[in-house]
Image (cartoon, rainbow, N blue to C red):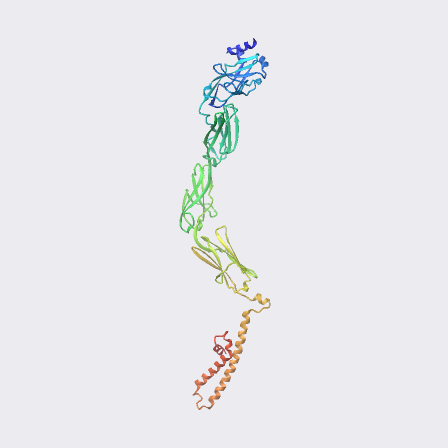
Length: 507
C-alpha cells in the first residue's frame, strides 16, 4: 500500500514537498546522428527514509512520451532499443547508453526506478529530448587563443568534436603534429588541445584536426582546419648576382637582396666587406661594376621585428693569373724547396720549369699541388742533391685562359765546395789541366821544328847569286815544313782543336 502511495504521489503531484524530495537529473536535449549510440547522463534523489530500499535488484527502465517501455535493464538486448545501464543504481546513478538510434526514435524519454514493491518511481516530470539527425556527425570545431602571434609566443589550439556516446567517442588527430596534446572527454564533447611555440615555419601553416567515428553506423571521418599568422624578423636573407658566374673585371652586374619576413622587409641596406661597415646603397637591387675591391658585398634586411645580414656574396670576375708575393724558396745543404702560389679566374694551373724544361714528380723532384681556401692554388717542389745536377734555373709558370705569368725562383750555380771538402777533383778541372799541359808541349815542339826548317832553307840559299830571288819559295817551304810536321805529329789531337794552325799561331 505504501509503494502504491509513493508511485501515486510521484507520478501525479507536480507541487509540494514530496516532489522536491524525489527528483531526477537528466539533460534537456541530446543530439545524436542516425545509427550512433547515445549516452544519457542520469542521477536521482530520494527522500532520506527511502534510501533503505535501494539494493542490487533495482531495475532501470526508460519510457517514451507514449509511456511505452523502450529499454529495461533486466533484458537490455531484447528491449525495443538495445542498450546498457552503465550507472550504479545503489549510488543513485541511472546513466544509460542506448544503441543504434534511428531517425524514428527521436522523442522524449523519462526514467522509471523499480526496486521490488517497496520503491517504484516514474520521473516523467523531468524527461530528456533525444534528437536523432541524419547525415552523420558534425565537423569538429577549432578555437585558438590568438590568430596572429609573434614568433616565440605560446599557441594553444583546441579541437572539439561531438561525443554523444561515451562508449564510442571519436578519435582526434592533429596534422601536423606540432607539439604536446591534452585530451578531455566531457559529457557530450571530446576535446584535444595542441600546445606549441610559434616560429616562422608556422606562418601561414594549415593546422588541421580530424575526428574519426567508428560505430554501428560505420566510419565517419571529418576534419576542420585554420591558418596561423606569425610575425617575425627577416630570415634566410641572401644576395643573388646576375648574370651569374665569373665575368671580365669591370663588367656590369646586378645584385638582388631578398629575405623571408612577416611583415615584409621595409628597408634594405648594402655594405662592402672591407673590414668596416661602409654603406654603398639602399633598396633591394644594387648595380655595380666588378672589381677586386667589390669582391665581397653584403646586405641587411629589416622590418619592425628585427633585421638580418646576408652572408657575404663574393662577386666572381675573370682575371689573368698572378703569382703571389708569398711565394719563395728555401735552400738546404742537400736540397732546395720552393713554394709557388697563384691566383686568377678561371683557376690557373702551375708548372715548374728546370732549365726551361717541365719538371714532373719523380725520385729526383718531389712536386705537390693544392687548392687554397681563398680561390688560389699552390705548388711545392723539392730538388734533391741540386749540386750534383747540371741545373741553372728554376721557374714557376701559371696559366689560365686569360694569360700567363712566370717568376724565376732560383739560380743554381754549381760549386765544387762540397766535392773539394771530400778530396775529389771535378771532371772539368781535370780536362782543363790536361789541355793546358798538352798545349804547352806542342808549342815547345813547334818552336824546335821551326828552327830546324829555317836552318835547312838557309843552307840551300847560300849557293845562289841573289839570296832574295827565291824569297817566296823559302817562305812557302818554311810554312810547308811547319805545317807538314804539325799535321804529321798532332793529327791525333783533332778532337780538342779546330786545326793545327791554331797552335802555330799560339806559339
